[in-house]
Image 1 (cartoon, rainbow, N blue to C red):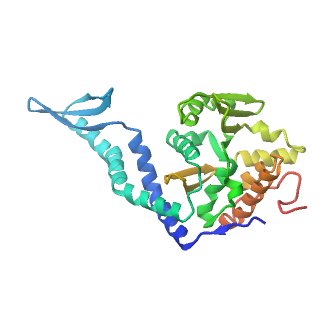
Image 2 (image 1 turned 45 degrees about the vertical axis):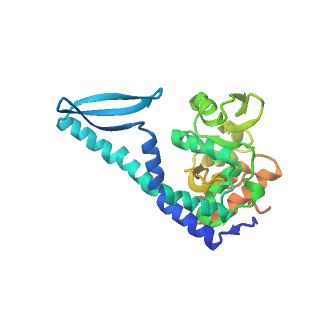
Image 3 (image 1 turned 90 degrees about the horizontal axis):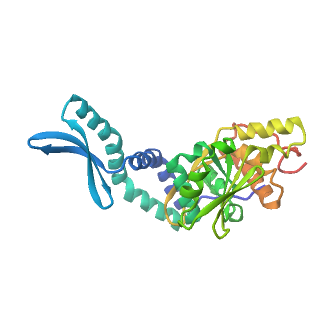
Length: 305
């Protein structure tokens, strides 16, 4: 069985706080980011106009929505109740969240590499998680909060992100993934398809991400039952968790459900992935004991025949 490191009192305290504030705070970050600039009333010759203002090329630009009226007042109230409220929440909670992240990092929770954290944060803002579920070592961190325990470091450590696609190749939106998500250094990235896997690498060949299409797993099935199990895993509801990066930022992770993770990782065919599969299997019993449990193709359980 996998040996997990239970949270210390300090780790548990900070992660508990972050779990409590993140639903509202994280949503507010997304809402605030979706609307650039601001909105307010501008008086022109004694008449109030509702305007949106934003910066463009270093200059302040204005867009008018018309004179004050029931319609423009309703529009402004809507903005105040959404974007305006979100910005107030971010402003009020920003320092507290940053402090909790620094303390969590000081207590040893912050293990996600900063570059990977930035890529995952971009995925989160762009809602890429509708197309991709996190896999690999980073995905295991999504289970730590619910388990109140840290995964073994050798299992979560990695030099690139791994994803399982929830859509077909043509629906991946590779241009966005390559240019916006993975090219964090702005040095250029490209995608390379290898059968049912897509690798995203820099212009110098440095790996940034691996995306596995469903066929990558399905072709490992040796029986109809194994194919059905893999299909169940690929379509299972996902698991969301929160972690802290090495640079101190909170990062929401949208991973495979641990049962699905165990099944799919078991097909990868090396010792590291086998150990990750067993860790996901073991932690599922701790965080979702009544949840779905899938048969592992080729063996009765992950603990041996």
